[in-house]
Length: 347
Ligand code: ATP
Image 1 (spheres, rainbow, N blue to C red):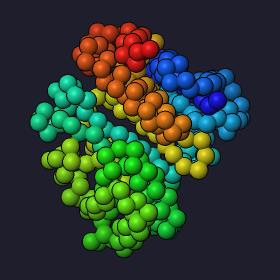
Image 2: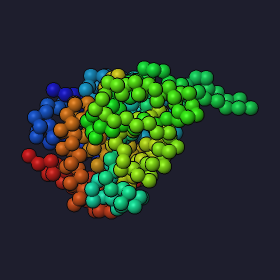
Image 3: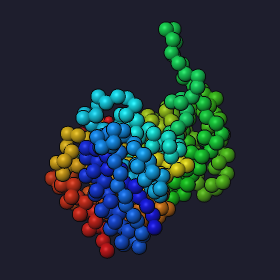
Image 4: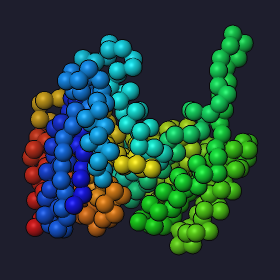
């Protein structure tokens, strides 16, 4: 029995997570998985009900679960609440609480959907990249940091365990995919980059099946546009991952298509990359693809059932060939699209 904490959140969050839960329930029946879902308030919804975005009851629910499935949080209604109880503060607290140090963002151009990509179809075809970003270290957290009248400074610093553990996540992910890993840094200029490169190369010795390549971040930015289909898994530091994952996220052509996973010491978290999209909330027109694909990642990475994750991904790709929500130029509702995915999953 696997316990899943569902945090629907705000805006379109509840609509897209309901779709993802339905798909997971169908997949569970088909693959004889036992899943138990429990819903908790999070984000703005929790501020309204409990006066804070990540209340104790939700924390307990997440701690007791095998995985967390999150919708989206925030919206104009909560923009003016004090900083310490902002919806986003809840998400940072959850990540910190669970020690989620690796953020996985796949960017895949689905067959038949090449025309949505801003790249020429011949470049977009076959793109299937997974960016693994280090999430809790690097220049965003390094000390010393500060600013005076005369200067501003930050420190990019990585310890061996920090690089090793995120590299392991990336090698393990590569084993579940096409067994290619690209490690990205700036070893020609930064000592921390050279240290990153050496440490990843050491970890590689435990993964002889995976082919490892090193790239400088500036060259990588070019390659992601000129031949994105060449890459499989990419592992990089917090700041380079922030930039490269945003760059690669535009390749599939719509925010509504992008799932994510955050893995680490505690309960892993799965959520769409998009936000709460208050402009379309409650209208039944949100694209649930990103949430459904996040549920697929949950099966692969939290339940260690890549077969189930692959089946969810294939059913979603098949559904997208015939049925599309308005953001992709179609007229299907969230529910119609979800039913099509469930039908494609089959019995
Ligand atoms: P945040 O700051 O919370 O990440 P944001 O304001 O940057 O959010 P989103 O809420 O992700 O952006 O979305 C921007 C716009 O993209 C939305 O207003 C909506 O029109 C569209 N959008 C995002 N996600 C979806 C989706 N799943 N289905 C349909 N349209 C979407």
